[in-house]
Length: 251
Image (tube, rainbow, N blue to C red; front, top):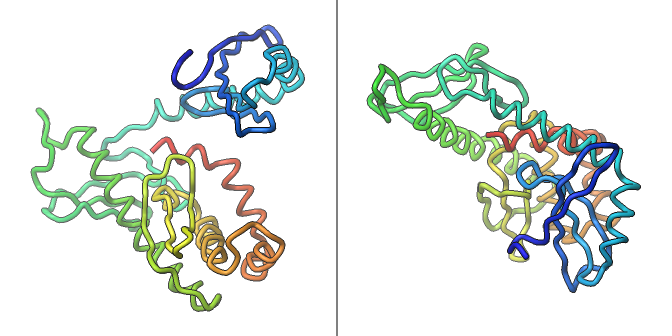
């Protein structure tokens, strides 16, 4: 068995689907997930019968095939992504053409006059041609995204913490693989830097969500009531993240 779980395949509506099974002695239910990198993954109890899994897959065939098509579209988008000056890159929910300034500063990334401007050291990662290599440019853009995420998130934390009457012990910006944010038992908040790619209202929702966990450590009615009091339309912001969140991981 692969360290990442058993692998098998099934034909659903004349489409061959490869899937991976992750079993756990602690799990009591079966969950299907589509991972942009690993494809279809089934999380189930350790002794759950293979025949039962196949029945579930056939029942969920429509959903599975729709999600697989969605993943393929994401992969096609990633293949089109170019790390060169002039390429459109996402920033706060909108695509802007990248403009590079090799002026000895940075990496500093900001939106300016309907462009995304990147300032980098003059001879940073210079390739055989005149400009920096694509890999070097990507590294500087990501560093710029992270710095911009810290600026924007800290501004929003300061704004909403005053309204909620709370103060986190720490605020960290991380490259989390699955989480958009988290709140530790000690009162530290963590945020995914890719939130700078999302529209500002979505970023606001994540900040409010984690700050509310300083008052309610669970997802109780009290917690959601506090979130709703701050952001009455929080469900729409959640929905945007569910629909578009995976696309932010192209970066």
